[in-house]
Length: 167
Image (cartoon, rainbow, N blue to C red; front, side):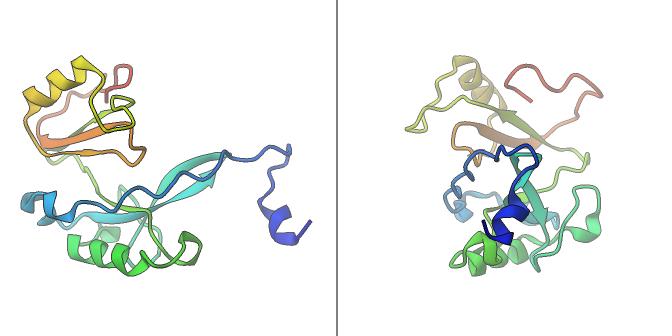
């Protein structure tokens, strides 16, 4: 076994599940200008942590970003350019899997609906369909391809923000 294989092997011999597929390229033209104008964009890529795949935020230059540190956030154009310039590379060589906007409690809020889409992208949960109609705001398919995210201006309650597959 090579040193690279040994370095990535967990101690108990189990491995992370297969790496998630790279989501489709964002529909740049669908992202509202109000969101694009906010200078708090990050790139992200899947990384295995504790035998699970998670989305790790990065600055466009490839250094780590933090959801709590505005100094690590970027204008939309920087994140988009970094994503597009790395699109021809493998993730192991600098490519990113996606871009995202940081929610920092200033009134921009997000609703996250998990496991509500079928393989064709149709909503399979009538409760979620009702929420989407009520919220009437920009929405996008989550990186998993099975959920939805909705962004809007709102005041969040201090606690109890997650109930089942809705956050």
